[in-house]
Image 1 (cartoon, rainbow, N blue to C red):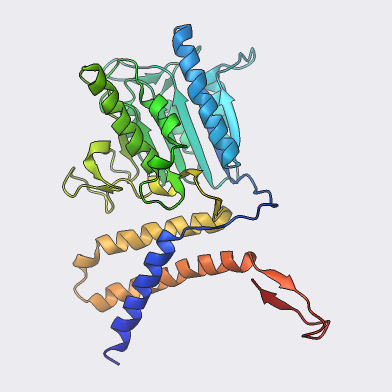
Image 2 (spheres, helix red, strand yellow):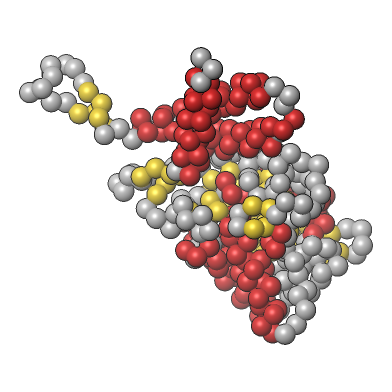
Length: 354
């Protein structure tokens, strides 16, 4: 009996590791996936035609990504609506009650910060960090807000919340020069080299790290001091982490002080931008459940040292692992085909097989 529990636990850890690395299932080439996610791209005031062309190029890449992942796509700011300002259109889109499993909001343009209020420059009234946060309250499912504009750092502190990934192109509101981060982020999202863990998928975390590195290299090649340093926050601690504070996909221990249980990066790695292989993510409610279970398991692992009795730790871990395994079992069963063979079994009977 003394050997039974450790043995079961080790087997469970092995199965969990396998599941976390095998987060995809073979796609059905003939099937058409439902649109479970939505991507909203907002083009800000361009200022000059040169910037306008760049912003249009970035948004077209996001539109292609949406098509690749079969996500609903909305573009705001490319045309004029005589009835509503761009600000009203953004707020209306975010306040809609939807059954999507994830929302991506990408803001492309210029930003300003006067020392008190950060703004994303739109045609007409600007979008402030506070106003955007109020609109985001209506979204209950996972949300990624990607701020591809100068002086965007204050948006991170305001938007940081549970179940959100927030990325800003700058680390302070005083980095006010034109930001190139959005260009690199939209470009690396389809590059196979961005897939650091080689799982056939490019996550938002992987794209963020690649874009941060390329942004730094851009200034280095020009022989100039970098005027932008992107931040990522997905643990609701309002601090954010720079790309150079990660080693691989994990934050360097002690890189920043945080009160959150988990360091930044885990939720961002659950947002998938692009698949480099013929694979399809577990979708819909299964994906939401899987992602939440993974976070709970990681949080529990972070608290392991606080347990006086390790049996209590294993007692809490086991049901989470079983639930996670059941998610994949359910997904696998949906892929099975029902075949009938009157020569082998009665005609009224049925057999399930791969």
